[in-house]
Amino acid sequence: MKQLTCSNCSNRVFFENLSCETCGSVLGYAPDEQLMLAFEATEEASWRRLGHPGADYRPCVNRKESVCNWMVPAGGAHEHCLSCRTTHTIPALTKPENRGYWAALEQAKRRLFYTLVELVLPTPNKLEDPANGLSFEFLEQADPKERVLTGHDEGVITLNIAEADDARREHIRMSMHEPYRTLLGHFRHEIGHYYWDRLVRGTPWINEYRALFGDERADYEEALKKHYGSPVADWPLRFISAYASSHPWEDWAETWAHYLHMVDGLETAASWGARLDFALPSGPALKVCSLDLQAESIRDAVVEQWLPVSQFINAMDRSLGAHDSYPFIVVPPVIEKLDFIHRVVRAGSSGSVAMNFLPRYGVDAPTTLS
Image (tube, rainbow, N blue to C red):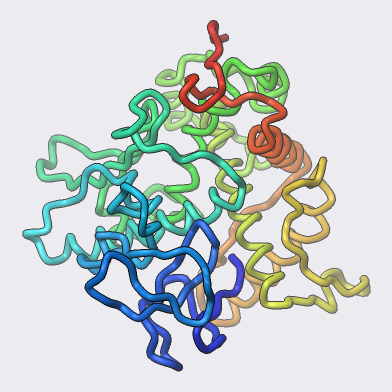
């Protein structure tokens, strides 16, 4: 993520801030401009911008609920921001703790949407576009016999709000022997399933996808049953995680999540001017750069940029007595998969390969899917 500054006083602010601690201005993030803007809050249809002329905005209606700091174009039809308008079910707010869980979920989702905007990927919502759209359902498990599972189904992404409870999520992580489990990680993984449908299914990419990830036509339920019964022993040689080895769809989603980790992580490090003088022992200094989203290939960037940065982050975590933020080993077959995802995203966002959207988006859906 880029460094953000208050448009009124130019001091550093952060993505979640509601106000500037230096000048006291009210803050709101404008995804259209990818800027944190300062405002004078009013009762009018739009808030008055401070220090940075441009379009008029009003706050997302969920700001009243203390769960959002994004802005909406003042002249538009939407009350909710780009991210919040895809949330279609929230937990019952009669329980005080659920409001905190909802806020945490929306905060993580906005970080996801920040990166999707960077990648120029469409994010329609299901209310306006039932066929192509996204819907996020934040559900509470009320009955122990009826499990609420995090997952994706035809654009509907369900998250159990228990995942927003740090203690419960850590308990699940340890019980499932997972090295990494975060809210943002869940969002990045599940959105990967959605974009597989939009970017790969039935497109010219399908054969290369199957060569790298495997044939997704393999029985999914049977594959998961086999994975949980007897995981692939040598998965570290070919996959980013053990779960990625369960089925080609999960391999794509896991690798997709890591592509988003890398895009956002490198942009953050570059924005802070990170330089690693000893990126490799006795090697040259490394000035960290954002991932070039227009590059034909990112193989070199994974090795030369992401691996040293992730190693440095983990070293800092250990110095502070924390778990590794990035407890993964990126092997050559995974680099090839990451590079494939980059090329697919680049082609889809540029329009050189049509996405799977219905004609309303200017792209014909494929007539046959293989």
